[in-house]
Image (cartoon, rainbow, N blue to C red; front, side, top):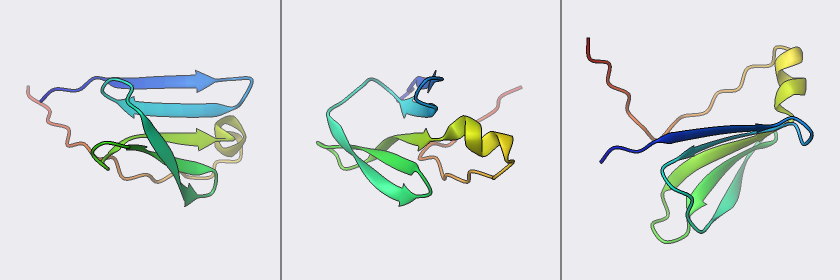
Length: 76
């Protein structure tokens, strides 16, 4: 099933949100260093990520490594 990726950045809150598919009821799981997984309450699957202090982190060149629950296929 195809899912759209939603990317949103809140400059005032310095928050980056990446969501796969439509918004669903869920909760956030802290995975450390101001990074959270968004968990679908019904299925228990990861459907997004939130990264706080994103701009501050990028200015200091600290890497953010997050495993996405998607597989990308490139067709040429």
